[in-house]
Image (cartoon, rainbow, N blue to C red; front, side):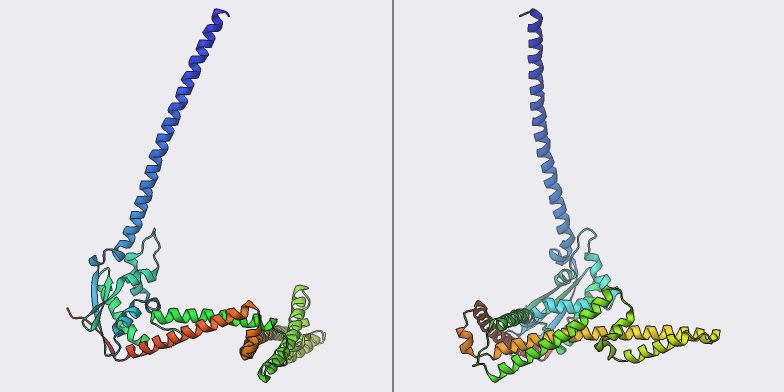
Length: 389
């Protein structure tokens, strides 16, 4: 090997060593940078979370910094749970919704109450804010309803709103829209199970075969279902004709040839008048003034006819929808009327599921009725007044 060959090998070895050292340094530096970056990101996330907490803090964790107005609620109800029920009602979602609906009618006051707690960066639900500004504290034979606000004025406004709204809401409370959260939850569960049960009834009815042992009620119901099916089929054909005219862009007067449309309101009369006016328009002996009047009358009659046709189609659709709903009701009635022995013999899992839902519904309704009686008693003879300082 020549001397210059050795020199080149030594130079290459030194270069390779230097490059590998450089790579190690780069990797070490990159790892360090990434660790630092992760720390920075972590700190940034913590800071963002801290800011989010700070944005809600005036409501959630710093209530002592807010102004207050206290209302006193007293009740002559004999139930030992009376005050607890009213505490739940005042703080519950149903009453908060009522308050927000009231505030929607007085936007300037709503803005004054909510704006100090709304951040541009973080969206907070109005009910969350309102729920945080209202709390109930039981005292000896009373409830203190604490109304908070960013200022004394907003605290007073919120207290006045509750004072004005709570008793009125109790007086006009509907059974299907209870103010007490416990009743509201039970009712929603009952509605959900009833809907599920009705769907199962329709499913079971379609699977059950004819049985001569069926009661007269069931047979009469099935007969009505067949009749409703026929009506649905007939009206559906008319709807298909309407769709065909529309899809094929046929002349609008084609709609008038469909029997239910022709027999609706003034459709037939208006169509006849329109035909006469168009014939009159072709008369070359008409003077210019009469021709203009005929044109105006044609336009007016066309618009009236168009409106009547649209109304006729809407009514036809509504009739089909009503018939479909009627069929579902009849199917549900038929299943309810089928003898228990027949249901027990059925091996369809839907029957067992329906029975389970019925048992659960019975328990829920019993619980609902009991709690409703407690609530009715609790609502009697309550007074709310502002606490004097």
